Amino acid sequence: MSAEDLFRVMSQSIVEGEPEEAERLAREALAQGIEPLEAINQGFVPGVTEVGRGFGCGEMFLPDLVRAGAAMKAALKVLEPELVRRGMTRESLGTVVIGTAKGDIHEIGKNLIGTMLAASGFQVHDLGVDVSPAAFVAQAREVNADIVGVSALLTTTMLGQREVIRALEQAGLRPHVKVLVGGAPVTRDWAEEIGADGYSEDALGAVRVAKQLLKIAQV
Image (tube, rainbow, N blue to C red; front, side):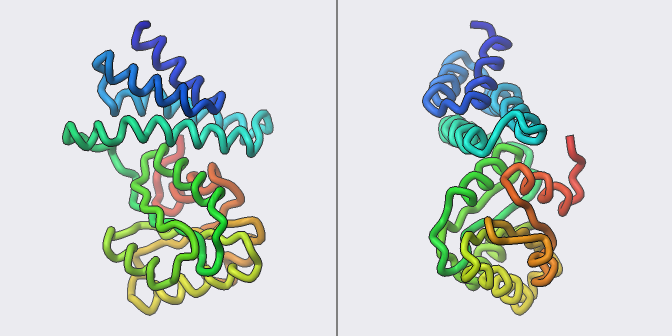
């Protein structure tokens, strides 16, 4: 199979949401001598772009997005360690710390956002679920984060998003760190009320907003 054909089926594995196939193709690309960065950018990222187009125009839906995210994660699991081993790095668009607010253990949406941000070129540090404001602050300071993303699926844990913003302010990080919030009960009005810089209803929207916050040109 030519490199061009391989890139095409790699992209298709993301569009069709096939993690096992994406992982197999990532390994095949390395076996053929294709650079891991080339495999990511020319093989798998176009698939993510196509899913984003389909989702945006109503041809694809949330389950398709979840499956595509799982496939991309499987491919990156193979290729990113190889990047490190070879001393190579992807050009980073920015550093993002994400997590689910204190008291909230829901993670599907947060995980999908992390995968899509990573696929788009951001360095993502995922703190997991039930994350305290202090933990967000500590990680943001440690990695010199550009953006902190806080997810909440419950109306009772939405208040944790406000607390994270307050903690960042108290730590003196707020002037340098943008805050992105999201989750089922979260609205644009709530984001504005608590002083967040951005809000998104879904993972692809989060990528778009993250780029806007850092003034990165949209493709």
